[in-house]
Structures are given as C-alpha cells and as structure tokens.
Image (cartoon, rainbow, N blue to C red; front, side):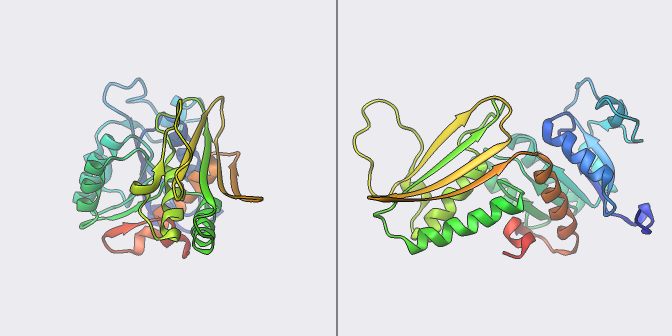
Length: 274
C-alpha cells in the first residue's frame, strides 16, 4: 500500500460511468495508489443516478455516488477522463476549461466542429486527446510514420481494423491515427489520399491512396494492421488488444502526467515521450 495520504492524491472524475470503458476506468482508478476516484457521471435520467457506483456495477460499495452534474463534479477535482461521445465531450471540455482541470479524452468520431471547440478549450485547460491510449498502439503509430517515410508510393498502404459489434464509429479513431501517421510519413494530406469505402465496380486502386477496411463483430477489443504492399512483398505492422484495461491504464497515466502541464492540446506521444 502507498504511504501517500489519500486526500493528497489527484481526484479524478469519470464520465460515462455505465459504459464498458467507464467501468474499466473506475476499477483502474479505484485500485490505483497514485489517484483517487472523486466523482462519476452519467447522463440525466440514467438508472444509475443516485446509486453508489460500486453497487451499480455489481461490486462492493465504493463511497462514490453516480451524479449527473459535471459542473459540481469538476469543481473540486484535478482531472476528468472522458470516453463518451463527441457532443458530450465538447460540452465537458468547456466545463473542464472553466474549472481549469486536466481533460483526458479517449472519445473518437469527432467532426471539424467538435475539434474547433476542443481547440478553444485547450487555450484554458490541459487537454490530452488520443484515438488510442495504449503504449503499443502509440509505438505502432510512430513505426507506421517511419516505414511510410522510408518507402515510396510503389508500396500501397492499407489500414485494417476490427472491433466489437457495439462500436458506433468507423473507421476507428486508432485507424485514422495510423492513417494520419502514414500520410505524415509520406508528406501528404490524409484528407486527399484516404480511401474509406469500396463497393461495386470501383476501378483499379489509385496509386498513393491510403485505404481503410473495417471489421465489426463479437467482443473484439481492438485489432489494427498497417499493410505496406508492393509487387512481390508485403510489410505488416500489427497490434492486438485483448484487454480493455490497457486503455484505462494509459488514460490514468495521461491524467497524472497532465497535472504538471500548462494549458494546451497534447496527445499520448507527449505523455510517453515519443
């Protein structure tokens, strides 16, 4: 056990408490010796509101009641970890900026209007946002950029991802992060080169495109391949996630890292020193 008094540990808020990642984050923080669970949030009207979060999760009581008021939850916290939905995340970002607390974002599926709101919030708050919080995926991202830089356009690039059947956005945030890394390595814009949908008579593959393929099924936690394919050879970079806890551990690491940083937009490459 840690000798650090609990009240001196950073108090963290978890949003989307009933979700898969929300519950995993709550367990990870509760077991941590470096942070404490300050508050948990759900949308107004949710069945869990007013219940002890541990009881709602089918475990022993944790002494933290599920609430629906982010302004109150953020007021005495040091950070918030947020794996929800784009509209909810940008609303949380505004409130986190007002409270001057760190905001760790694992939400994916953002549009340009959402990203503009997050950029505005980052002028007043420390925001760490990543399509994937795992160490392995961030190493894969760096490798993807380096390989794309080393190979010319004779190598076609394809990003293939698989997730569980409840995931609502496609391609995944991680797949897009890998695509961005490949585009950066090539010195091109992903928006100009991405091929995100093939159906019917599409014609030959356009040279220089970065393709995406999506698989949804069962309880797949997350699988990502980056394929560099040329005549006679292929290079495949792969990451397989088998336990959602890796994302929760990464998010907690990001929340602790952000405690000593000024306002700005950061990602897991910053957190991991990559």
